[in-house]
Length: 73
Image (cartoon, rainbow, N blue to C red; front, side):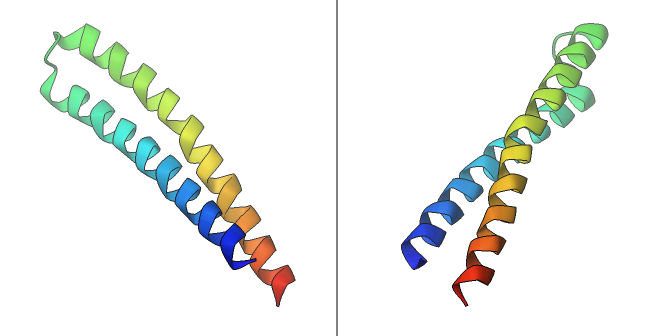
């Protein structure tokens, strides 16, 4: 069970890091607008929406980790 939780923890951390990194990039695009105002905002919105995919996977993995940990006791 500990091995399963370790693997799930690493996967969770990777998905969370990717999702939060994408959100950070989207916010930076909104603030600095390196491609011009409208292009940067459109790209930031697209990246922001795509960032929710790995965050959703991280949420689901965290839920499964909690279930595995509770069933193990």
